[in-house]
Length: 391
Ligand SMILES: *[C@@H]1O[C@H](CO)[C@@H](O)[C@H](O)[C@H]1NC(C)=O
Image 1 (cartoon, rainbow, N blue to C red):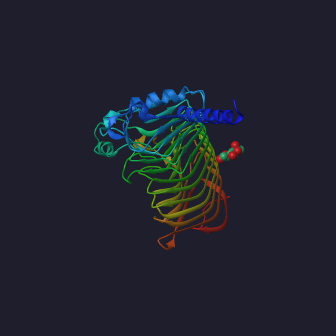
Image 2: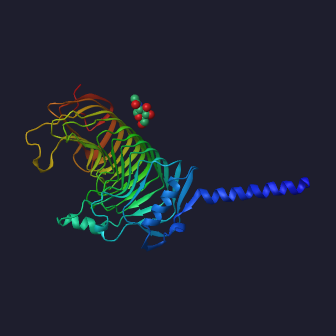
Image 3: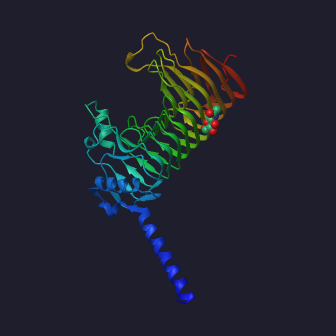
């Protein structure tokens, strides 16, 4: 055989190999029966595609092309054999009848998966009828969180849009090392309990470049959250970035090492909030830093509230949550109420080590006010309103 011919054979088999491996490494849900018509139930097709990618020894991409895919509650279960990318170019829509998701608690659930990246896509949970049910005080199912990651490690969620979630948009629970970036979460101002991102027992989560407009907390940071980094978050409307509610239970994991920087709140109910139940507990909040935060017409820009107690579940009790080491650095803008800074700490567990540095908040071009109860710390730099913290 001539050298020339041999090199052609080598080249062609190489191209062939590339093709084959390419075909094997992209698993298109259409191939498993999914229909991009927004009507045909594609749940089983997605599950079949997932089983293929999850069992693949090589790294693979599960691909959801353009179009609308109708999906009921679905579980993507691990552990899987290798890295997985879930690339979504289309929109995933929930059943129009909210009872179809019922009380499953989650619509799209990733459980016990490692090294999974979900990239792009839109989730439309069509929550309007469900919110209406809740507001009417009828007996409604608990509602579903649009996308949940639980018991996972090394996860990434990038470029996703979630609209009209029934309950929270995104839940990260019992996970380590999660990157959330360039995500948009959107539900109306008046949609009940539509938290943007809810974290529970999560460590090493990074949330960056995220726009959240929703009816409840933009980010709610639950018990057991540690080493959370949030950067470039746009929040509002919504209830702010909230640590809590903590301390509902006597035995509860605390929250520590939380950072929020370079972020803005617009027309939200709260900005930087820490909220605890007025009940005995061993829970705590430690080492929180808020830095370079812009407030625009925010009702409670800076608030610690240790007297949370809906439905009188804690009469005459005080919060056992120990709050210590909370820094507010370069927080500027406008408050929509007179009291722009409120530290309402527990009489039995004073807040300690609060630091205010260059806080400049006004109320309708007038002076705002501060309120301090059982709170101690240091004020440096600009202090508007006048700080009431005691050393
Ligand atoms: C605090 O969290 C950051 C990530 O936000 C991490 O890099 C750092 O190591 C953590 N610090 C401690 C003391 O755990």
